[in-house]
Length: 465
Image 1: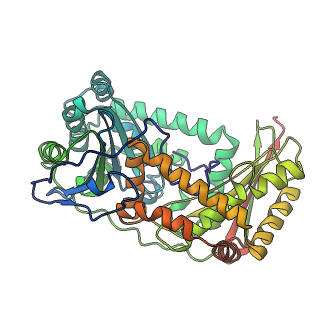
Image 2 (image 1 turned 45 degrees about the vertical axis):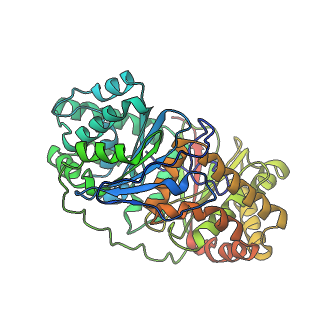
Image 3 (image 1 turned 90 degrees about the horizontal axis):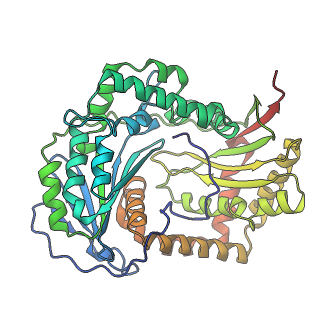
């Protein structure tokens, strides 16, 4: 999907909304299968976390299993390490296209049968694509376990490339691009800013793809992409819910282990050069009513030490009605109607964002001055004790809300395993939140949120001809 910053909760770890209140999981029996390994004590801080088990299949696919017997349901998240980052001119948007194609038939199932079979078993599904990953989400009763494993193994091994279906989904994706980018002011601005902020790294490409590429993907390119990136050794599966490790390992060995591994994808070695001066763009667009202003700074990767401190900083600036930018731009000066912030979480250094939605006829230059003043103030003085404590409380609340749900647990495990290198680091998060100091926030503001490191974009309404 197109990368669009959202009004993110400060320090939230991208966990799903609560579905049920989770209690301590019943301890599973010790798995006997070769390759299964109980986790080291990952955190007495979270009930049941010590029961997590990891198993790696012979074809290289890792499965992380977290038993949670609170209700008879299961969340299965399969993370493929493929996104816009793995594309190049000519095939941009292909990862997102496969997010659609993976629901559209195999050599043994007709288009739409995946959904019909899952829904008949009481399940539901969704998926999303980012710069770095494509994630398939299944939610279902434990009675459907074998059905879901059979479905997932089938589409990993046997995706069909019927020319009529290929063209139909090409049209669906193109329509989605028109809705989310071409006809949307915010989507248009962010796409242009990404393409301006990155001059070398593939993060410059829109996840949904450039229009000419969507129109011209070749069938052989699609087959090659699927074979390379939808291999079991390029995926990690997270299963959370009313399961035992033994049954999950047995099902994985039956339905997924026979799928052969493929040669690993070519590594992405391009490093974005340091930005040596501010970049500015103005996008003029018909059909919108009010200006938009956004700023994006090159930020640390999720594995780097300053990533969390920057997330705190951006949350203090742009998250919620008590944030500095809302209080200054919306409440005090009345020069914006909404503000927000976001921080990319990816394999490589991404962008940190703040943005403002102006009223019709608003003055982007006045908003820019006010944002610069607030950034300079926090870089000079740091956050107040009350602001820092608010950020810590928000972080703790977000963490525990995620731990209440099997969906939240599966998403969090996937995020930490994929972007931070080890799912166990999830359980270090509460202590890391509390360790962020005012000096950390002040230092990161002075180092990262500087003009020479940013791209500033303005969207200006124009009259329709």
